[in-house]
Length: 149
Image (tube, rainbow, N blue to C red; front, side, top):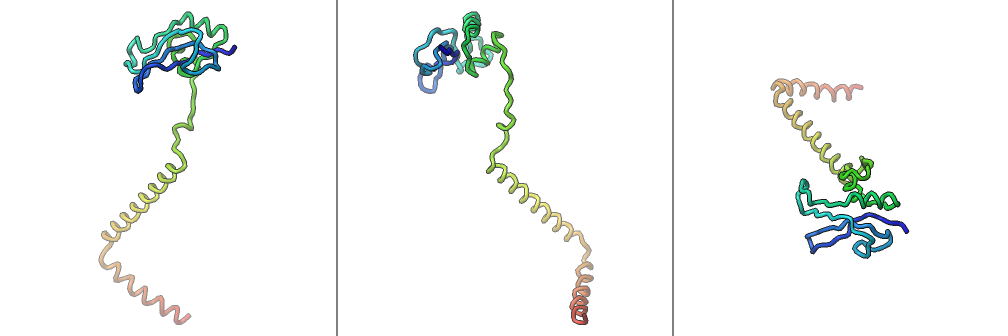
């Protein structure tokens, strides 16, 4: 029989309270269990000693006979020094999705365009007043060259 060490939910709506139980892995979450080895109250402060109550000796026994802890229970066992838990790393979890990256790229291009327009407006304001007058004869010369050529 495959056994698991997992949480069994109790408590009322919006007020969870969990029992840490050893159970057949095929049984329901809140169903029949073999042995209760502790409790977990997520409503208490993280530094409260009653937040996680665990019988470490019984947990060691059940792990020695092959019981597999769930992820959350493995964290509790690691904190209690019963079983070391390998750190997990999922670098892709923090990455934004496709739509979010598209929106970020659009925002970045709009910002870049706005900055370019602002710089162009500043340069036009700083340019000497005579510069547009110099451009006018050059514009008139261009059509004459085209007419001759």
